[in-house]
Length: 246
Image (cartoon, rainbow, N blue to C red; front, side):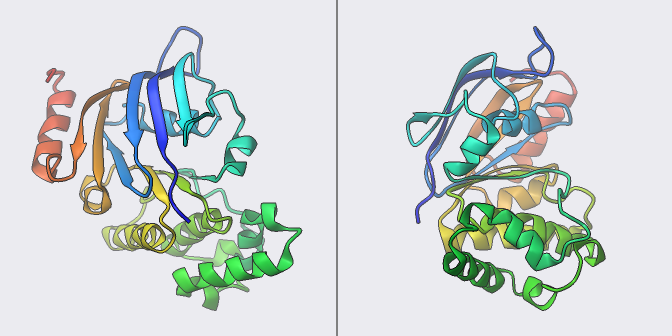
């Protein structure tokens, strides 16, 4: 499996008419690459992901997946095209077991029991800690295990593009590192393209191929990780917080 090519062109979107939270964003995400979107709170990062996944209809612009326009499609249609979305909240079924949650993630495979079982086995190979807890209710998991499960559930149907919103929110630095190890494993094993946003800049930059800095809904800077290194990104964010352009 290869990752999907996501292209965003002059995208503007928001929650209220006439108020754009994302403003004229243009990005190109080659297949199999990791793109990290960073920036201050309120920069529009999460709104960008919600618009790509179809939760929000853009006011203007276009989103294409492998050249196919998807900006007018709903989330269920976009998911059917091979896009997974891991929200900032865990969005798990707390009373269901780990394996039942994973099976819910593979609902599109529910009529092909053999394939679903093979996918579950592959996910357990990618996330060994989940195998030993597969009979436990999700509400009994630790914070790091729950984040792992939320990500693994979206991996079951083999997404070609995975959108990940604040994967380390509320986690300790040690657990944050584990979450990024899981994401890196998914990328290596499946070739999945990743578009993620996070406040943990250092961890995000460590696995990113391309880094995008957003502020007030716009892309302020972007480039390969070699150019968008930690010191530069922190300096750029500080300028954004101070209200300095450029």
